[in-house]
Amino acid sequence: MKIFPGGRRIGLAVVVTAALVGVGAGLVFAHEQSGSALAQGPPQVIAQGKFRSLTWTTLGTASLVREPSGDLRLRLGSGFMTKDAPELFVYLAKLRGQQRVVWKEVGDLKRPEGAQEYEVGSVATAPGIQVAIYCGKCNQISGLAQLQPIGRST
Image (cartoon, rainbow, N blue to C red):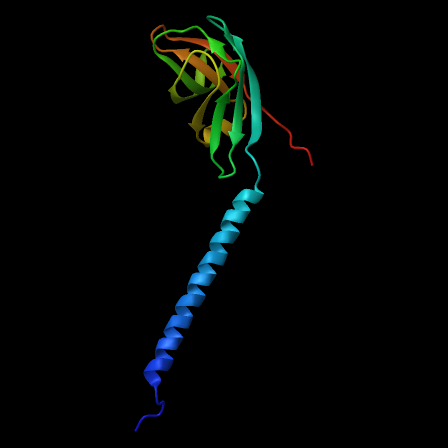
């Protein structure tokens, strides 16, 4: 004796309904996640500094930028310029006199002038951190930019 005549149809209807509810919930959740990323706004400059020359002329600015995704990027401004030389690198540095307290390679300098961008880790937010343009061939720092925190306006 069958308790539910047409039980297969009801079971199928329940499965289809559950699947549609699941897909709908997933779309709503995905929309909320993308909406919150958009709500975070544009990238924010959290620290900035001007280069000072050490061994040869290095000019321009360096900025530490937090992307809406939370990633940190180091940006050298469009006015950045240093001497073209082999083996130029970008470092995050914290110096005590001549001693390197922090010395983390960010990457090869992409070009000796103009705007450029590099991915950096959380060490970039350490107090007293500087951006160093370093020549590996001559073992000299050509310029340093002290990153100063930018206060947020409320």
